[in-house]
Length: 457
Image (cartoon, rainbow, N blue to C red; front, top):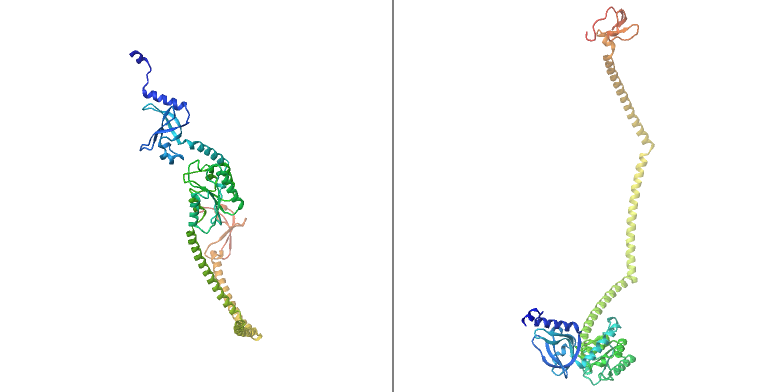
């Protein structure tokens, strides 16, 4: 026995439960399970633990807090043992105890489950057609002339709507289009009331709704034909079905969804007190504007009165008289100025005429002739003195460089008789040459006997 245990590939209980859990979770997809609720436990953690059973079997279930979402969250506190429930989830094993269990992801009363799935299918269909798009929604009028209400005339919803409307803005009339809001004929009656409102064209906005109830009670507002009629309605529609947690198809296709019928009444009309305050403010602004306008008109009237007074014949004559007086003064001043200019011009002409007379011109010419005569005599005398002086200087300068002056100091000019050249170097003279020496007074002819010495001798 020990040998068998040693050679066998034994696994632990934990491993066994782990493998079983993996087989269950991988081998089965998520499933819907219907059964009777029992052994419901609500620990402080917020998780729900219970058992679903039928006539011959049962399964443990766990609905963890992080999975608890969706429209049934508000109803979970009302779940009780004995309720017929519809649970959606995956099959698993709680490894610590080896308990086979259903991990619940969605839980609801079994009676509502089929309706809710039908609701989701229709919602997805209409959303795909664009009936929920915000671009299709029509804006509510700021102050409707008449309000239409499509609901049961005996329901609490109508009472709530009318109470809010009387409180907020009682001056707006209300037209009631009676209709059943629950039961098999409710959808058709709601469609008929809506068609009557569209045909009569007497309302600026419509409220379609009723008070709260179960999913079955509100089901007529999930009718596809009614939803399409609301989407095509030319009048803005406010859907006010049930309480804030209740949603119907009409809520999605309507132009505005209100959480309650009372909320719908508050949406379609403004607050009368607020409007009165705004009207009071506007009246004050209008009065101030009128006062400013009147003040502007008064000022313009005063200005026009002054303009009219200035344009009267008496004022015109007075201005013309003043204007003529000014012109007379200007004319006298211009005449005096012109006479003064003419007198000065006459004086200038007389002076110029006197200066241009023949006697004066002859006298000036004689005076100028006498002056020029004196200048000519003085200039001639100066020129003669200068010429004499320059002649003396030139004679002395010429005498200082004259060859005759040199000869008078004992020098002689010697020439070769044959060639007539002036001799300056003995190298050009040979014995027997005929030479001629010019002295300061007279000329000597001689014959060269000997030549001796050089330039330095």
